Image (cartoon, rainbow, N blue to C red; front, side, top):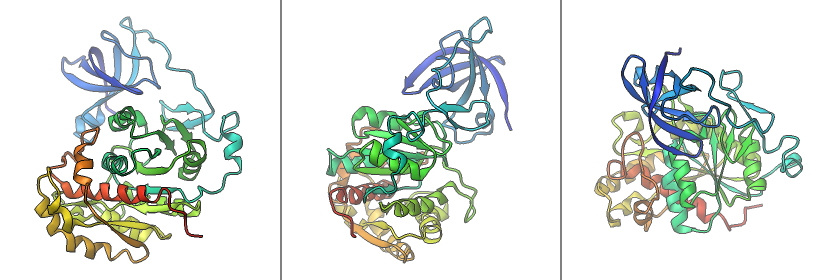
Length: 378
């Protein structure tokens, strides 16, 4: 299950909120990229000794190409120091050696405990649910383009990466001012607020963080087995149900691709059809990007192919009969995506490689932004 390695910090490459990327010189003489989470261990410096978990790296799995630092020791081999002291009583990544104690938004002693103690709805809050973490950047690009003053909160579920610090995208979106705050739920940790589950996380986003809009996705590291049910994005359907139970306005983003080499993800992915069509029992707005308009856009390659997908995408989405299909135009979304403050990438493909994917996410962001000031139906 684990492949251990010992190493020395050769060089610090870069850092962002909660994480340090470094070059580790393993005791076998080879170098590798490694990642240390500074909420879990002392901050590493050149010359420090490291204990690494290299299993995913050795197997070539999608960890971003990192070995993961388990412990940081001083050059003499002694424990270097302590990370920040635990602030609360919620335990995340429970019963793993690196379990983390965090302060829950609604636990006793929290500044928000009284506010959240009896909270039972999110008062019509629009919540946009997407399958992949890579959807976050194009969604926020569109929201910022259409509603630059919107207060957007990202809710990260625990179906992908558990440490929010693994996401450079989140750090850069916050730094750019297009993402106001974050909530990590379940076993995920590292958000501005911590919550026990999606339901309590949504309540915290609405009432403690005063969100105008929530975007809910898993963290980086989507898991799939190539089977109908064996993929982490099944949780999108469960998220739709949670939003509806709490009186929010669920919006579903379709995972669409014109470039994925796997047939099951071409056009509308089977992930979206299963999660929204089989798992979600509550009705949601499912955004149908108007791909026929794609050829009027500029500055993005492959738009003719996107336009040719229009009928296929509409037909597939039509199978989601429980939901409200909402056609959304693409005008201006080329400018929004090209102005993204972070690099757009999904499964190693950029905007010009798979424009259908990014336009679909941006269209979903556009619709969700349009709901911000619209009174919810009674």
